[in-house]
Image (cartoon, rainbow over all chains, first blue to last red; front, side, top):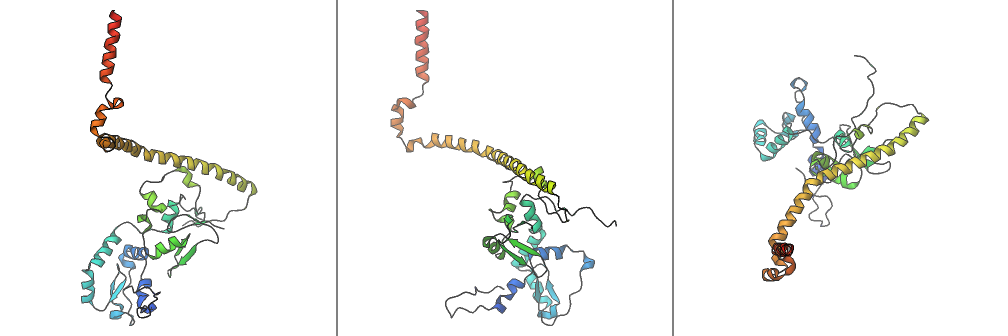
Length: 119
Length: 166
């Protein structure tokens, strides 16, 4: 995961490439993962088969947004410190959002006006 | 035209300032300056960074509940232009701002209250314990200004009483 900083003066050590850093910015944001975890069970879809992903995209960790090659590897991942830390973080309070930022700035809740359609 | 708030530090982002990041799930993140943008890219949590409004709010450094917070809000409905309304609003903004600043100052004063007395106590104990660092204890005993004035008072009272008797 990750990769080195792309701006290196020394040519020998300039081995960072976008593909090697891709995992870093293709990772889901904290709030997206949090929402995914809070979804009710009936909304969750079975994992689609994707031949580009490791293990055909069948072995997935929701918390860390990672695909694994097999069940064994995934279970091994579940035992890691990184994963457990992540689970703990996701059990906590909801991640910061724009609404939180607005409220902290001294704004009230958004005013959407009266509901036009009576349900 | 809308004055948005920065996602990270909650300061106002004026038109032509800052940068906006749209994630691939169409969520918009606005940043007032590169400092906030960089902190976002480092995946820092604004609630844990001390200089953000979110932190200050959460830790009771700033006022949290106040009626003045109800005026400024995102209004997601069109408003027909009314000259009188606009004029009155502009007048009210000044007044509300003044009220809010005053209340904020009061809040800070209340917040510092406990600390000030604590500081004074600490200063008093420090003076008591480490006055020797400035003056030698032997010199202190001879210093007339630092000798306890009790004896002097008693003697003067006695002399006064004596005089009265006389």
